[in-house]
Length: 171
Image 1 (cartoon, one colour):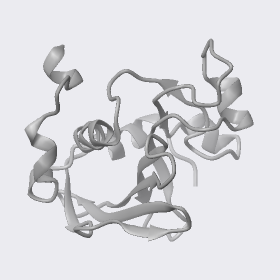
Image 2 (cartoon, rainbow, N blue to C red):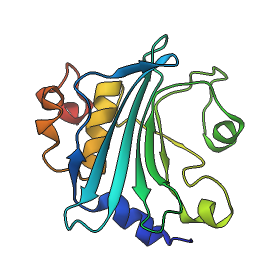
Image 3 (cartoon, rainbow, N blue to C red):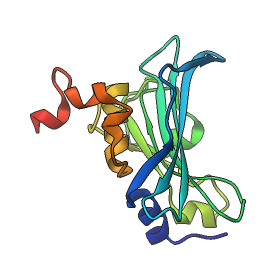
Image 4 (cartoon, helix red, strand yellow):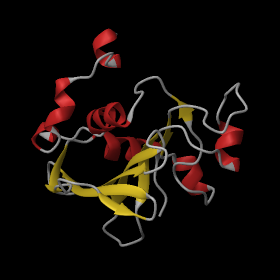
């Protein structure tokens, strides 16, 4: 099924509530720590799943994302993925404007795009560098706000305390 960019943006921005909370402790699996949660729109009409992953050897290499779950069973659609620095893939390398040749090139965000879906590519192909966060904790707080998750402090109480040099507090 095709989606308009307006639909994808509305899925991302609609008010959501957590229906299946994340575990208190992340699971260790295949070289990373992981956690998941289920969400739905506040009107109960739209379902989502969120994932959180942190590489065990390189904790700066993380990924936090939100999938829209279509009712027709056609499979999840990634709406946003917030990443820390990691080794580039050929898609990321071509689409990120970065000046360093290092494979750890910086924090970045992948956003679901209707054009990618229409062209048969993964929705979140391509990435944009970001200065909106500089750590996993900062990225998780940014993600929860970007996805309009209500009452997130109930499940992530430590995120609301702020960090030394919290980017949002400095701005």
